[in-house]
Every structure is written in structure tokens, then in C-alpha cells.
Image (cartoon, rainbow, N blue to C red; front, top):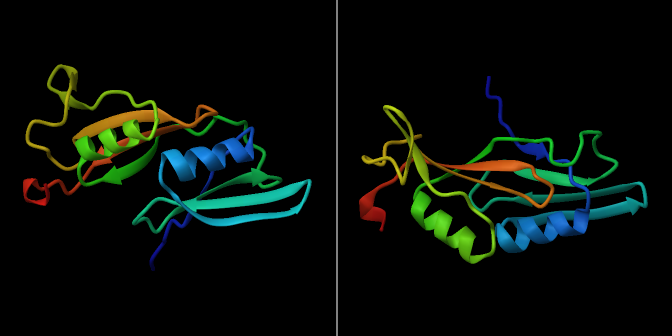
Amino acid sequence: MDYKLELIILPVSDVDVAKEFYTKKMGFNLDVDHKASEDFRVVQVTPPGSACSVTFGVGIGDAEPGSVHGTHLVVEDIEKAHAELSERGVEMDGIRNMGEDGWVDGPHPERADYGSFAAFADPDGNTWTLQEVGYSEASD
């Protein structure tokens, strides 16, 4: 039996601000922006290459804006992704990896899968973590 994660709901305070952040700054594809009434609007966006989408809106959940923490976006080249998002205006924390004595600045020395991280937040404070998997120097 397959269990496919296809949708994550993010609580946001301003749908238009969130839509601008996720489509313009993050580069996510806009799949749906449907407003049925003043009490119901759904916006669905999908990261490039992802099978899982993100939805936010009005009347689709009761979680507090900014209450989702640690959602991971997997990238093949964390340095390239970090630079791209920073250039688009996303306020990124530095790239780091877990060394023997705790967090160390920079990507994992061997660029091991699941070894390099960088964090950021959306306008409401929902937090995300970039995580590198599948890095290959040949892809540069």
C-alpha cells in the first residue's frame, strides 16, 4: 500500500501576502486560487519538482498563523538553493551541518545526504528547513 503525501495546509493571516511570498519569492507554481465566498478561499501552490503541494486560505483550517514549524524542502544543491532564495528576497539563515560537537557553519564536509540544512520563515512565521539530498559535484 502506497501512502502519498500530497497536501500540507499552512495557517496564514493574509492570503494575498502568503500567495505573493510563495509564488514570487519561493518560486512555487500557483495551482489554484479559488474564492467561493468571503468565508472560503483556497490557494494551492506547489514547489517546482514536488509531488506535494501547500494550501492556505480562508475557512480551511483553525490553526494559528505561524504555528507550523520545521517543514522540510529537499534540494540537490543547498548552496545554489540558498543563493537563489536569498536573491529573491527570502531571509535565510546560514547553511549549517551537525558536527561532532554540535552545529557547524557551512554544508556537510562530504555533502552527505541529509547532512546540510538552512532555515527560513514565511511572513507569518511558519518555518521551513532546506535539506540537501542527492548532491553531486558533477551536477554543477
